[in-house]
Structures are given as C-alpha cells and as structure tokens.
Length: 146
Ligand code: 8DG
Ligand code: MG
Ligand code: MG
Image (cartoon, rainbow, N blue to C red; front, side):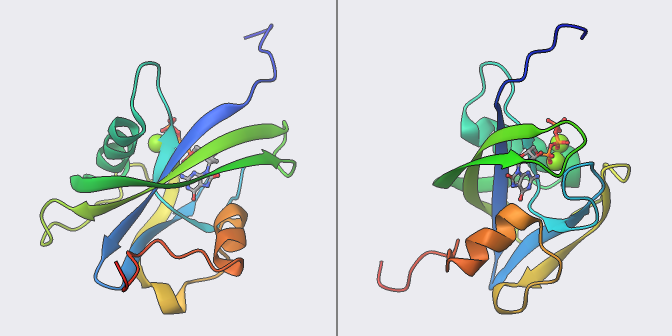
C-alpha cells in the first residue's frame, strides 16, 4: 500500500425501482457521510457493470435484482474526502426479482439505514453526485412515451 498510485476507480450505483420509489441508504463513509445514496460499490476485476450492480445489491441489502439496464456515467473528483478520490461511476437501473422481497441492512458499518423513497419526495441531504443529477432533471424511470 506504500506505493498506491492515485488512479481513478470505477463505481457502480443502482436505481432499484419499485413503483414510484427508489431504494436509498444513509452512507457511513468518508465520502458523503450521512447522506442518502444509491446502493452500489466498486467494480471488481473481470466484472460486467450488471454483475457488479447485482453483487453489490446482494451484499449490501440481500435483494435480488433483474432487468438491469445501463442509464448513464459520470466522472467526478471527490475533493471533500480525506484523500482526494476520483470516480467514474456507472449508473444502472433494475427491478426486484421478487417484488415482495424487502431489503436488509447487511453492512450496518457502511449504512445507517435503508428505505424506499418516492422520486417526487426524495430525502435530504442526498449524496451530492445524486443531488446534482436530480438538479439537472435526471430521471431513472422509463419514460411514458416509450
Ligand atoms: P465495496 O468495498 O463494496 O466495493 O465498496 P463500497 O463501500 O460499497 O463503495 P461505495 O462507496 O458504496 O461506492 C463506490 C463509489 O461509487 C463511491 O465511493 C462513489 C461512487 N458513487 C457515486 N454515486 C454513488 C451513489 O449514489 N451510491 C454509491 N454507492 N456510490 C456512488 O458517484
Ligand atoms: Mg459495497
Ligand atoms: Mg456501497
């Protein structure tokens, strides 16, 4: 670890859509502590984005997801973190494999709690990359005209 280079990392975050709601958790992390963020994590060697999204959902919430689709990508430098961090983040959407399955908070050291939040009434404060997306009018739900 003594020769760790500063390199961009790849994050994968998932909008799990249930009705008009999305799943958000309160982060416990040096980046975005105490803010509401999407479940997700780091892309591991050899993984597809979809595999990473499904794995992180399972690890963090116990949920099984399906219909996983790519939405967008961001490129952000997190200057707030103790050591500046640079993430290329892949945003996916997905549906629950079993609509009756609910989340468990399986990583309570990394998450204070999870919940389903109405897209039109999101909690505050949102993790700032997510807040920025909301501010520019991004919407993870399939458009009505499709
Ligand atoms: P891991 O050890 O499980 O792989 O990592 P993690 O602890 O679950 O990582 P994470 O912070 O949840 O996600 C990795 C990075 O993805 C995060 O540090 C920054 C980037 N990221 C965004 N937006 C979002 C978001 O809304 N949720 C999550 N979880 N990560 C996001 O840019
Ligand atoms: Mg994780
Ligand atoms: Mg995570």
